[in-house]
Image (cartoon, rainbow over all chains, first blue to last red; front, side, top):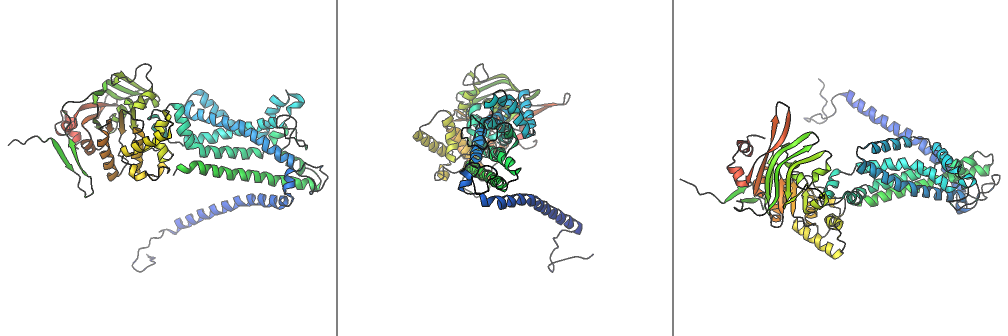
Amino acid sequence: MAAVTTAPGGVDLREPSGWRRAKSQFATGAMWFAFVCLLVPLGFVLVTVIAKGASIINWRFLTAGIPPNVLPANFGGMGPAVLGTLEITAFAAVIAIPLGILGAVYLNEYGGNRPLARLLSFLSDVMTGVPSIVMGLFIYTIWVIPNGLTGLSGMAGSFALACLMLPIVIRSSYEMLRLVPDSLRQGSYALGATKARVVLTVVLPSAIGGIVSGALLAVARAAGETAPLLFTIGVVTANNPNLFSGSNTALSAQIWLNASQPYVGAQARAWGSALTLIAITFILMIVARLVTARFNRYSR
Amino acid sequence: MEQPEPDVVEQTVSTNLPRLETRVQSPATMPGTTIFDVRNVSIWYGSFKAVTDVSLPIYENEVTAFIGSSGSGKSTVLRALNRMNDLVPGARVDGEMTYRGADLYGKGVSATAVRRRIGMVFQKPNPFPKSIYDNVAYGPRINGERNKARLDEIVERSLRGAALWDEVKNRLKQSGLALSGGQAQRLCIARTIAVEPDVVLMDEPASALDPIATLAIEDLIRELKQNYTIVIVTHNMQQATRVSDRTAFFSVLTDSKSDTRTGILVEHGPTQQIFEDPRDNRTQAYVTGRIG
């Protein structure tokens, strides 16, 4: 027996078998490897977009109109698309977030095991997996076609994005509501609160941080969607601040249009739009973090 | 030689910390007004009969302790007293349960109205994730109190009533979750008494707390008795002797033929009698620690 003792008279407290130590080291190494693999595509995308898009971005790019594709990068900008993305996504959020949160409240607090609740829960799960282009086609069929030429508008795009956001908001809010301990509900009931009071004054405030960050993630996801907008907003280059009538445009749609152009200026504007979109998403994520921290200030 | 019957049972817990000496008063010979009258009550959870045929009275400004082993239905009966069992799907109460003469399960009785008069403190402290102030003000607020000065007064009075004011008066804006276990439980008691209930039900209020915090809660219970009627479920028999005037002993009845078990009330009476001179030998076995 080769007793390995590090200190004279001391006890060897190291892992007794070399095999177990090796397995542990292998597992740790595998995790680091996976982590690095994960960073590579992420870093590559970010570095490429910044490298190709940063030089074109300035105040003029964010506000000026979209020039003809043949013009070089120092002409015009993406103002209409920035405005369109902000308007369309914001209106989609106004539709989807309240509906989604209320739906989740129904599922978790009122639905219980009722058939309707089970059906809704199942359908919202299915909707999460529906390809985004199907949402665009859906709005195209039920809204754009019946309205003829006036059907294409920023609002139609908002409808499509709202359809996309709704299941995400429901799912994330539902998971947050489920995490609210039942002991809090009981504490509120024991003080003579009605069910609506319990939900409004205890359950929702306890879960609001997670609900808001889930909703903002859904907004960020929707802001970058292209497919639902292709059929619904018309994708024009003219400036149209009116969300509710007339064809509109958005950053994601402009990236799609410009990137397939042979002109260097149009391609540069596509990179610039991509970076702008990433920046908008990034800002939303930071806001989500701040909001969560603000709402969670009492949870220890 | 005949020893005179002592009026007061002295109990000393052997540690040199202050306030550990507690005494059990022999109950008033004449009980006060009957607050709850429970007659032949059985409680079901779906097809499971959790307790069978319980009858007992609960008197005003007394502490009534429910003792007994797990599964004997003490908590079930306690939760039936303010209709917290309504929240369990499939729960059903048979028999008659009156509160100050009114049928608790009568037609048109609102569980919300019942719970405003009959508050409850739970086993695990469950402060809301709000500030200490908002925790205490929660009950008055949901009952429509909006006046800031009134709320300030209620919060201070309730926290004083729960012996917590001096510890938290300078940090009322801090989260209720930042308190220690014993403080959090006193906060929950303050929250309960802030709505000025008539009865406070306590479901093992000290079982998640350390011995010092437990004694603080027990001192508090004895104080609260002046203004409230208290019903407490406890697993700790010393606690029952320390705080209660009356004790009800519950046990599990197992039917080996149908392999079902149900909780029954074995006997109830003045705490001193239950612990010193129980009429039923099951009580005797339990209180002397021969059976769990």
